[in-house]
Length: 227
Image (cartoon, rainbow, N blue to C red; front, side, top):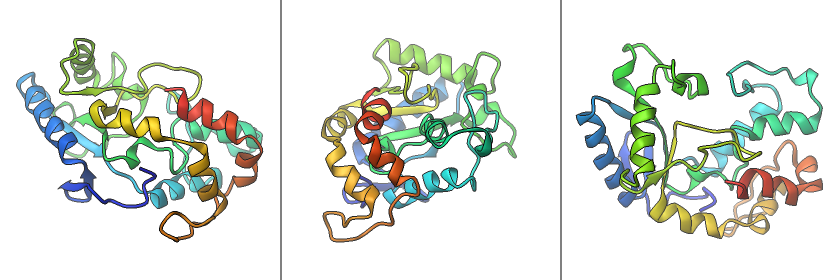
């Protein structure tokens, strides 16, 4: 569940992995979306601990863009270390805590709403009322509200003070709830510090590890548990 392996997952598309039951539910949801006029596609599924570490470290070092809720780029020099980390964690989970580690969660978009050369950015603006994926979002939100979305829901549906709303992120509740209940700081902090994982493999410490260690409990509560 920490993204340390793909055991128990299946490859449902090139380079994309998930639990078979989640894939089955996604296939059923995609078929219903097609009847409604949408071409539901997956932008991201399983993501490993190492990949998530690369993303977070690159953002911390300024090698990868960090944006606000409107997609506007933020400048590293304008923010303190604490505020820069907060901006990163609004949209990028710390490794070990990402729901994409579980094989239950997907980032989705509507292929039918855009041209062939369009690359989805997974920005809030794409899913707002005037955005290119607004119609699919409205349809899916209605299915979720009616508890008719093949078991999927949106864990980041509203702003709870930690992770920003992510209208593109869906989670297969029958499996995801169990993984969520198993999340603990005691599992993640040693990995962030560079200690060996349960298999004996060591991972490089996160670039912002000193900041994390100093306020680990509050950060874990705000950006992991408050969903």
